[in-house]
Image (cartoon, rainbow, N blue to C red; front, side, top):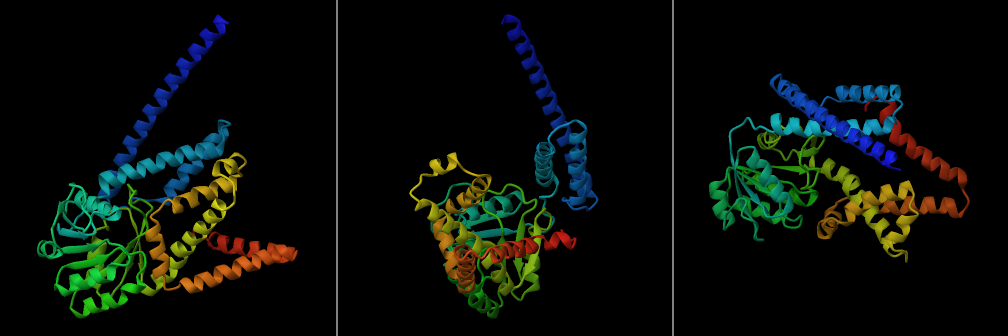
Length: 371
């Protein structure tokens, strides 16, 4: 027994030694990738290079095979290292702002996205002011009125509740603010009239949509939609705040934005909300279902939980102001009825064909070589 315990102790010491060496090598790798980031930035190269990352993963798979290690496990480890390298490269080398520093007033700056924007702009070197009817923390300089903030600002970012955005645009425009104005609203259709009226007052206005939430640390692999509202100058000035980051820009007109968002947000939100409602009305506790959960169920719960734990008022407003909601809801009803009828009426071929057509749609980008 003693011999076995002594052997176990030595083996555990060897594991700790190996762990230390692994961590040292991880540190060395991150040091090298930080230096690579510096060189890429100086050479004007983009942060993301999917070809290089793909080669790293393929090499890791080959090494895993040579060493008889699980390929998926090795891939997940390498993906963690790649993500951390991206994060550090962005923070150190791709988050600079090369333009003229501005004084930015964030209307709604006490909210979660307002605070994220305030932190982002402050890191970029801008002066940040916040105006909010809800008292916020002391991290940023607050102004007592919209008028006071506008007098000091060169740019206004509107980060308020969806139902308040139009009147906020109206108020800023009515005060003849001549700096840049842009909102971050998830839905744009109900803003069109206010944006048009602001343009009639010669306001420099555009609209953007960050496709991420306030918990984002790095902009690597993140998307911002930029909506042209008729002023190239306003659009380019808004883009300038993000051009030295790793964010991916997508240009959209207001109509196309809302059409796409009705699927990307509206449909995905409502399906997960309905899914969670069915489960909560099932008579089972979540813990009971989790005990016998399938991989599909657990994966779906990760997505559905992330939706159901978000701000319900915001998610309601996204549905309410979606100009395509009736079209989406009609398609949902038709799809649900069709698939249910396939099963109830024993229409196997129709059910199979429905899944096959969806699979073909999902894989068409890969087969055309666009991914």
